[in-house]
Image (cartoon, rainbow, N blue to C red; front, side):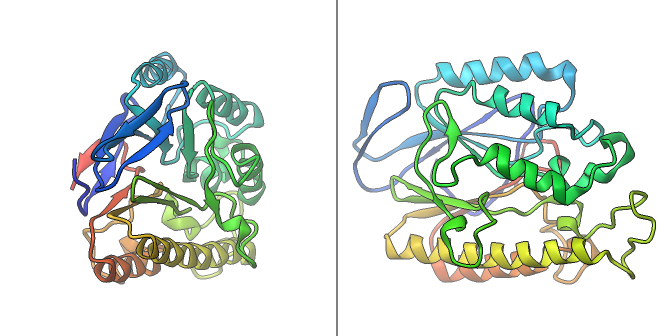
Length: 296
């Protein structure tokens, strides 16, 4: 399809196969030993997220990965976060198992974290973990080489880790495919980590926020804005025909600026709207968090 300004939420039970078109030729290896050349530079990628949620659906998730591997038109996969349900433990074992499961993919895997992997790990049914420790674990596990994706055939990406002052943000990446720019930004649910970590810390409230939680949000929010600006600038300088923004959070686009439902998201949304209008070309926003497939 021709990319247009919209939002996507993806269910665990299936992958959305998205086709895109640009105006030039391209030739590259798809990770299965096949070189492709597209006269119209069309290509397809799989968009997945919000899952798998629970042990019962893991066989179905494995089948989906197998089907993606069998579909030779799919060139890479984007997972938009939440690799576990919000009611399961954030243990090393579970997260490592999920990472290894996703490595079954024979093609590049692009991943952006979700709130279930770290922000919400303070919950008792998640194991009562310190969220910032889980965040570092996710960064170390899913981004072993920030200059490359993971998956069976890693591809080179641009990473914010190479930007002075933002070295910790290995998860923010971008890459160009056939004149379409793809950018991943670390924006998560639970109000983008502005929701208090209670009862893990009963003193952490909206009125008296933990300093470390607020500092994490502030630093990551700034990094996301800088990275988004960089992606649009790079897309413009390279003559991109369109741009895809991927993240986990459902940012409550239906609400007005300043509405409590948009807590933690106003800065990013306002910047995205501004840059999209200036860019003047199709922009697709792909996100999860609402657990249903929807096109707005």
